Picture 1 (cartoon, rainbow, N blue to C red):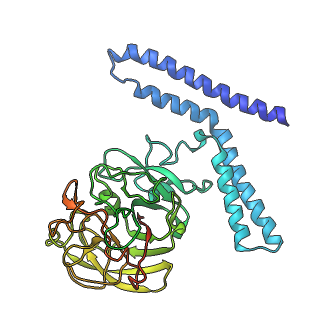
Picture 2 (cartoon, one colour):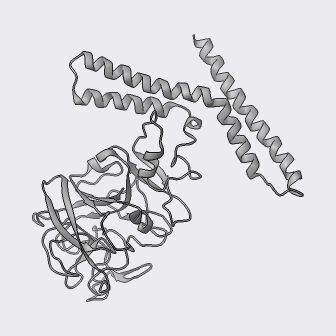
Picture 3 (cartoon, helix red, strand yellow):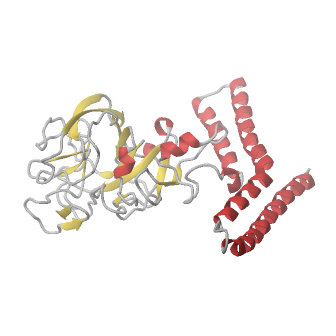
Length: 376
């Protein structure tokens, strides 16, 4: 049996090598031909990909089918014994692990696996995968419509049916001014800001796309605000508090332009419904500026992303959910430590949080920990 497996693997390796050699010959030939015909090496790239796909098609099909078969056997076993939700979740893990152990070439058509084949969002990647593929949460390549180069982000492929893209994060260490506070940067920051989705504890960042998170949010129907605890990486369920917002009926084009008290005068107040999924319970009517998905205090201390109970362009409030951003104070009374953030925040503050981040129902006790925003 072992010899048979070895022989099969050898066939795949040899066939792949032949495809590589054929591709190299194609390059040599096309370099000569290109002088007159102009087709260029791109033809060789397609030729090589098609050859490798042909070599490995049967092997990959069998590998992925085996992963699915193992899952079905696992479920059947637990159905005959005393089954529980955790046991069936174990079967899902078995299928994921076996699927991802199939060689990378078997996943060549799955979006997001490579920089050359990004998905428009984590939802797009999840929707484009086949029925036998179960995609794990982790880093994937993202390129929303309107951005001209891809960036990696963390995709949560399991929470609330999966497909959630991490757009930004920050950190609240304490209330008021504190040098350890790291407010969420402006989500229209060109090319993102200090983006490290797998090293995000006690830090701040915006997805490293040409227009920041603007196009990602424009293409989304739903938003999640997750906060509390301080994960280095990982998905939404690692946070202590999670809030779900349907943004599909927002009539205004999201720009994430500076929306604080002194700059958001032309923006429009929109009503949203916020549903608590973890840490709190219930659904509440809340308001935010539609173009920014944010709110601002009367003196711009604080300003940030999220929602308030008040139907007003700016006001004072004590309920959210609300995450402080670097828009705090820009254009108003300037405190020490103000800093410029491209393209439209001249003197923002990263270290002022007022009363920390706000939960759906209260600002007391002061909420601390990581803040994060996800779209789907």
